[in-house]
Each structure stands twice: as structure tokens, then as C-alpha cells.
Image 1 (spheres, rainbow, N blue to C red):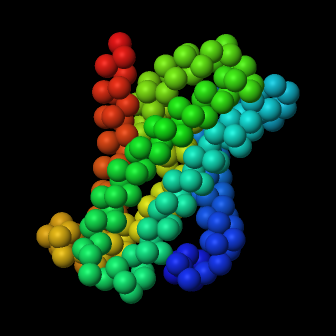
Image 2: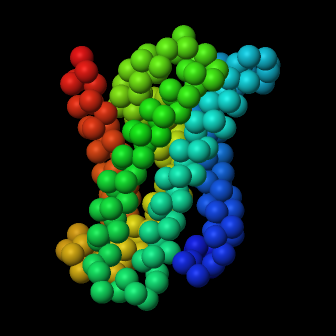
Length: 213
């Protein structure tokens, strides 16, 4: 992964690699989501408004969210691999990514929903309605109950390289690392970190929903 994401590579190449890996992360999860929803695949294959709305949702909301979250994750990965970061415990990178990941999902979904209401007339054209559905939508995303869950798990493509690398080098995470078989330690810690991010997103959205009720 280091040859695709480095602090020394041209910015355009870095951005293009993020876009490619974002699509690689998105398409399989999106396919699973479509196939597991009864009648959804056939409705999309018929074309028409259902397909156009679906593609618009993915291209104007999903892909930008995935790209930005992945950009941050891959940039942190590149920084972690740089020599000048060796003085820091890599656990800091995981913590920062988890916090940033949750914040970006909330802010970007709110921003995109408002734009969808203004530009496409979604949510009845009401910005207030658009904002009101952000929290309940994200509260169920970790359970893969809506398409926001697709976007969440599609960002695993940037989380795993960062978390695996950080977990393998972190003295702070060593006690957790040692609980698992040697070859699976870093991957197991990485998956736990990603699941923690998903849980934090769900909890944060649930708290916001309760406060607004």
C-alpha cells in the first residue's frame, strides 16, 4: 500500500489512487446491499426513476463521503509510514482517525442532504427535513439497514491499512495485540478499531436523535 500512498508522491497521483480505492471499496459492498434487498435489484434493472435516483444518491452523496473519509485515512497512513512520525505512538493515528471518521460522516451527510433538498428537491425540498433524517439514518447505518451503511463499510479499504500498520507498531496496543494469535493480532485490533468507529457513529447519532426528540 505504501507505493500507492506516500507523502512524497505527487498530489494528483495520491488523489487518483484514493478515488480508485474508494471505488474498489464501494462496489462490492453496494452489490451486497442491492442483492439482499428484496425486489431492489429487479427495480434497478428496469431503469427509470428508481435507477436514476439510486445513481444520483451514490454519486452525489455516497462517493464524495467515501472519498473524503478515505483520503483522510490514507493520508494518515502515509504520515505513519514517514520517518518523522516514528517518535509518536501509532495508537494516536487510530484514535484521530476514529474521531475524524465519525465527525466526517455526520457533517458530510448533513451537508449532502441539505444540498440534495436544495438542488434535487429531495426530502420534499425542505432543508429542515433533510437535517432531521441525518441522525436516524446514521443510527442504523452500522447495522447495514440503509445505504449509509454501504458508505460506512466501504471506507474499510482505508481503515485497515492504517489500523493494521499502527496496531503492529504500537506499544500502547501491545497488550490487546497479544491476546490474538501472532499473525492475526494486527488485523484483529484493526477490525476492533473499525467496529469501535461504527459503534461511536451509531451512539453519537442516537444521542443527537434523543436530544432532538
